[in-house]
Amino acid sequence: MKKVANIFERKHKIAVIGGGFVGSSIAFALSIRNFAKEIVLIDIAQDKIKGEAMDIQHGISHLGNAFVYAGDYEDVKDADLIVITAGRNRKPGETRLNLIQDNIVILKNIVDNIKKHYTGSTILVVANPVDVLTQKCAEMMGLENGKVFGSGCILDSSRFMSTLSELTDVSNENIKADVIGEHGDSMVVVWSKASVTGMPIEEYCKLNRIAWSEEIKKEISENVKTMGSQIISAKGRTHYGVATCVCYLAEAII
Image (cartoon, rainbow, N blue to C red; front, side):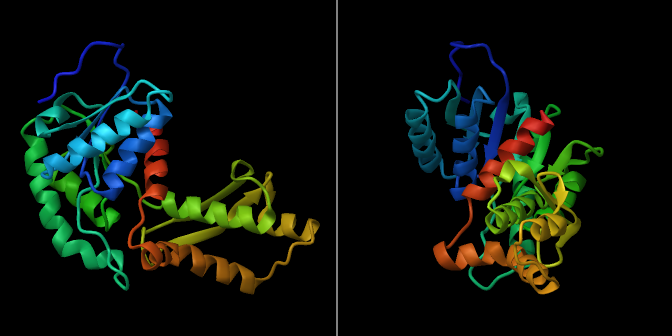
């Protein structure tokens, strides 16, 4: 277990389980947000997470004072938040539900190790299929409602917002848009609540002479639903988008 030098007043500690592309990207994103003072990466591949932690630590000298290090499951005992990212990733052509069998086995091993040192931290599940694994994690941990969360459709909502930003040429901060339901093929794009500068999207487009029709709505909905697959086909994986979304969730949770 890594002992942290008392060089600053501790604010929040976050344990990230899984040091692959998603886990390391989350650790990096958290570190530059300067939200957590202590970020520990946990993975069976110790050499890899030591390298990831060093690389992140060396890159944030002028951005914040987070301490990023490689640890083990004992380090979850005083964490404010445990983020579970470990699991097999999707391959091109696979859906998130194709990962259930493999990732439930991985999750069980993770939960068994967390239980040995668990002291009440909130748990955030990011590994896919996130909705199924979040439910399973709560059951395996035997925790009450409100202690285990999933990242859900926050990334899909972000993709929806980004798409509307491109369509309207309005910055993301002035757009509100949500995707609900499963983080998967059955997700629902909520058009009735989508707004730009506080104005319903349809009204905004008509007022500003932006092409708008049911066909355009359908095309955008389908595009939002398949963006993850598009990225995987292009580069093999997704990780930056979910990393920044986890920062948003972490700040909301703790």
